[in-house]
Length: 282
Image (cartoon, rainbow, N blue to C red; front, side, top):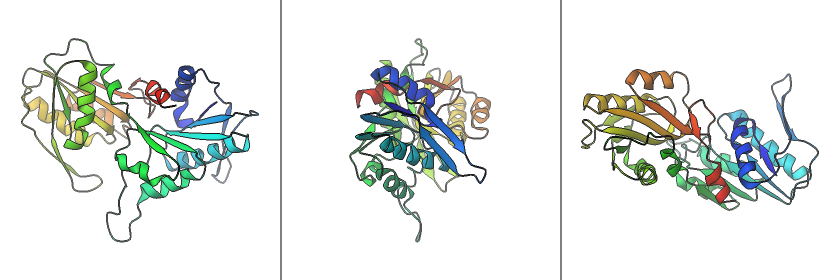
């Protein structure tokens, strides 16, 4: 049985179709004092697959409650699928006295899970923080699906060296094109400096590929550099389209020809589902 979190209802429904498993009836409630009460209906699953992107702190609590509800319903096995794992970028103590938030969150989730899957976390090492077996599901190849078929001599460009594997996977799935990356230096949680690569983009279509687009500031800066260099068109494709606040506006003002993401974070630009990639691992 597939148990959908409120943040992952479309993805959970698609996963239920992929696996030909029932979709659990769920309730999402909030008490007057702000506390949450999320649960599942009168079911008795042998295996419960809880699907919940932890895009907010409330979503983290919801995930814990749904895991516990599945166990209360009699599930022998609880598999937790975290399509987007919040706090995964806080994978180390950045200063004395800081928490390793990814570890703290993973430990909490571990109390209710027999197995964990997470889609393209910012740092693959985050799986080491879970007590039960945890593994990464790659959705990078799916990023090619929404792209136009007639891209002109395309370049798949990652915003930094760490995302080159995503750009390569998207290029391989598309079937042709070059791969390159910018140099990105993060000075703080909100300040990032982009250094142009040596890629020749004049007259070519560019697909900027990343795992997460959050505020859009880094990506819009990259788009502006590409425009200065004469790129024909620039498309943005990411696994997790957080697109907080005015991120989409920033990107459109910078001149993007299209923005696409998967449904690990359910947004209007979620053109492709990560469900097939998750289903393969279940």
